Length: 124
Image (cartoon, rainbow, N blue to C red; front, side, top):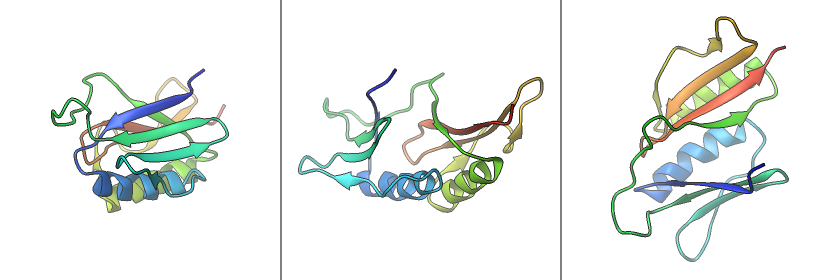
């Protein structure tokens, strides 16, 4: 459904370190920074990008927005969460785990710019 997702970052290198770590747990190669200073993670299913906002204003998170990454197991979700915490992310919502009344095993973090991101494995 989606071709790409781009999120704002105030410090590309700090955000790249965070995303290199968490996305490695779901099988992504480290991001590549282009001549304009944007960082791209390219996969067969889409592209995830980091960019300093082009309007010159600071990057900020979207209240109510979450970007979710598919994980192949609950162990990958846990590794994703641990990698994020070790690389500048902050925990938010409940601890990693199965959500009551669902088959979704989730972990949530805020990235260095405050964007809310998630890893999800459907155990059903």
